[in-house]
Length: 471
Ligand code: AMP
Ligand code: MG
Image (cartoon, rainbow, N blue to C red; front, top):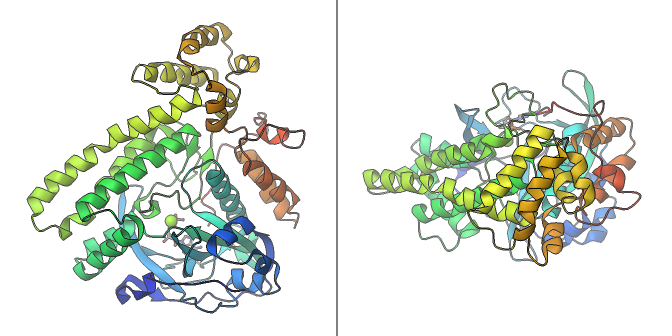
């Protein structure tokens, strides 16, 4: 396999990473490869079917031009400072400048231990690999900035969690894997050389128009506010919004115990480790601002006038809620087929969400069918819905149906479907994975006889209410 590597992170100061080869595995086998993404990366899709593909995507064979390394970072985990984290189960193979001109990382996640593994084994099991593949590709198909999945392989080795499970590796593609926590690591150590080099690298790579740290902060905040608004519009709960899981490029990253809601409840939490609901659906915007305050703090040491910088950066962080609200209005306005939503539409939208919450209406299906008579079926109190719909009618654009069809997916990767896929994959049956992947990567297509099953909300018995980090 030929990958046109062009590595830049490996040129940065050596304290920013450790050169690290993936640890070979026994008997890798390909589960899935992503030809469309390969093409963007400048990889010949025909190479994905070559005999060495499994060896490359498992980390057994290092392709020419790769410069494998593990990145160091720190982070606030559930609000608690952790001074030393890093790629503990991931190895960056290298970067390519894609055919769209964008530089992208290719990383093997589950590739074996690194100096940052702490007590972990550096491995992943099949379950989280399947989940990340499905959810990241679904997010991409729904127009949400996200890391992507280039390939998934099984390793032919077992990993041990609470039980013995099949090992797997996912090839993750990102605009970069630089996180808020990467900045925090060097800022907290007073390593000005690395902090400056990292900042210059990020500006050149992701925000070439930024004139310095203050500008960078503004631009990251703007992207992150919009990203969270998009999550909210899909009923998506990231689950682990720690600062080490916040991409500086503004992509959704680190799909652990994430979930899309079925029935709408604003306080929904799925992650089994999120005891206090810190990362609940409705908390995501507030946590986003908190995370940007940590980013701002990490940039302060770069500024010549510390007091002035604190004042400016505080103001920048305080602008985030308004940016988020603006993005939210535009996201939900489109979901209701409103061409140019105005402030007054906010009440219309929140009134619908309140009704949905009271009725436990399915988030995705309510919006997907809002225009159809069967939307009423989502509401126990149909009169209340009809009263609301009468207020909505005059606000709809002439081409509301088109706007709504683009803003409201028919199919999301529902938790119970992902669970089914994972259970089947444990017996070596990947057909459900491929069927679900096909459905969630065409989320706006009209339902067919084959795909209608994936749009159906779970029955009480099927409902998944807890998700796990499942490293
Ligand atoms: P996460 O909660 O997935 O963002 O991971 C938090 C930290 O734990 C990161 O630094 C990971 O690299 C590390 N980590 C998670 N799982 C493993 C594992 N199986 N082996 C080594 N490190 C891990
Ligand atoms: Mg992480």
